[in-house]
Amino acid sequence: MKIAVTADLHLNSKHLDRALALQNILAQLNTEGIQHLIIAGDLFDKDGDESAYSSFLDPCRSYPDIQIHLIPGNHDSEQSLADLHLDSLHKYCTPKAVEFEGLQVLFVPYQKSLSMGDVINAAINFPEGQAWVLVGHGDFIDGSRESNPREKGIYMPLKKSDILESNLKKVFLGHIHKPTDLKNPLGGKVIYPGSPQGLDVSETGHRRFLVLDTNRIEISERRVQSNSIFLDETFFVFPSDQEMKQLREQLEQRLMHADWKNEKERIYVRLQVVGFSRQKDELIKLFTLEVKSLGIKLYESSHSNQSPNPNFDGLLNATDPQRNLVARKVIEKIDLLDAKLENSLPLEIEDKSRWRFDQGEPSKEQVKMAALKTIYQIGG
Image 1 (cartoon, rainbow, N blue to C red):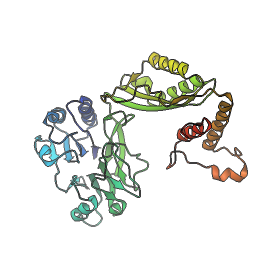
Image 2 (cartoon, one colour):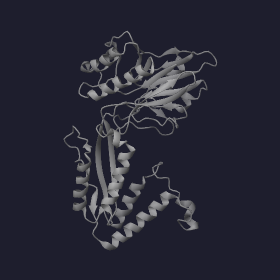
Image 3 (tube, rainbow, N blue to C red):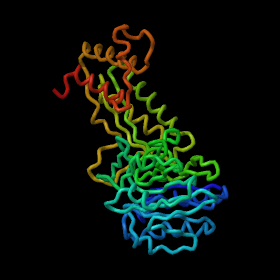
């Protein structure tokens, strides 16, 4: 048996793409013959927003054979879910275990000011050896935690010590919109499906939903064919006579990664260029023309104080030829650190050069920018 899992749709009558993402998920499930969809909280963007109800009910009515299993998240409430009526809808506003062909799924709805672990311990009543899966909504904490930039604070925390029970095979959580890498579950078991439609440009790339095989207890993912795909790209430039080439190569690489050739009608991009240029004004002109010639759709924010797009505020002039030479040499050395080439550095510092960029440390671009600001005496 297969069960689909998603979360954090944040349905809102002003953002119809989110309802279209749900409709696409249901259409794919119908094609595959999957008859159960779990939504792990935050179905709606705002509690009590009755104008959003049709964004959920209409797609579900189009696929009446698909059973929807829903828990409230911190954006939902028992009242808003109580207003939803469908024969195919199963709402879990209190903890409940449901069997899916031999696999027990424990649904734990979001409850303010409670930890998920306390609720789980009180709810578990499975026979010895019974395999089970947890579905909840909140923050997984394992020394550090994935942050939700849209919401401050900690919501219904789940600790690693709460999931050590050997019969607990998988944990699906809503709340964090960033999808978890299936090859690297948090704490070995925890996976955030992520939002099936990016809510804004901070939620980038192709979105997904998950499919759980209840027999093998294996998870696979499916791509959501949503109307909008957001990219938020920052390009780094250092002084040379190949500055436009640097930008063009970075742009082509990012677009290729996003499957631009097949998806360009759905992709909206926010662009930022940072670094140092020998001819800043000319570079801005050339890059702007390049973006326009490719037909890139630029992301437009609804906030009036949003930075321009493309944004060149972080691109600074570099007109001193001696400093430009030093900058080029420093950039080469930083690239060697990242390349991890044998004999690229003196033996006495070789072992100390293994900087793990982006792994709890600044990114390579951040290191380069800090070095260039020192060379050009920017920021003190």
